Length: 269
Image (cartoon, one colour):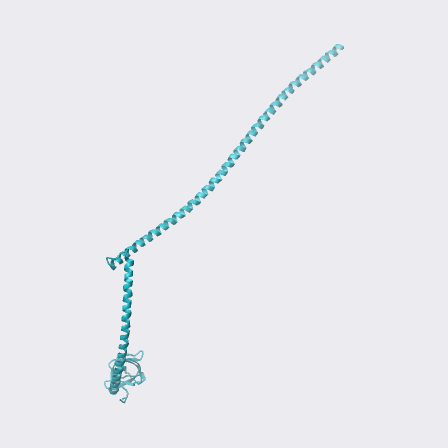
């Protein structure tokens, strides 16, 4: 009985030792696994930290690149703006140069014209002595103006004398004409030189020099026969315009050039 108990006890002790040994082995394996896992985690963490550090460095590099790219874009924009400004300035400069070329061409044309004018003024006149020549011309002009004013004064005096003599002559002529008119008025006779039937007037080839006046009453004859009356409306020295008295015209009669005009009634001398 005791032997059995010893055997059982030995078996129990052996079993306990086996399980203890087995458990220790598994524990060691688990411990090794845990240690390996910890090491792996540390390696992964280290790699992650390194990767994060690399990412931070790459981010910093990228940020720097982005900033540089933005600066380059701004520089490009500024350069483009500067290029456009320079292009505009170049265009304005071209226009200015063209305008200056036109001005130079016009100036050259003017200089040629001045040269032609100088040639016309004389072979001894140049641009260098032109001011002196102009001063000389101004002096000559003043002298001529003074002489002209003197002549004008003389002419004015002569004209006044001539006018006085003319007035006297006109007075004498008028006196003679009036006398001759008074003598010859009763025998005064003239000829119709033109007729305007539409406007009702005619032109007589005699005027105030022949003694015609606005009050003169005139009759028109043809072949010694009375054919109508006319009334003077405008009298000039050598012709008279008279209105036709259509009521005095004989039926079917029309006044025409060549008809004779005489006084309606004689006047006393």
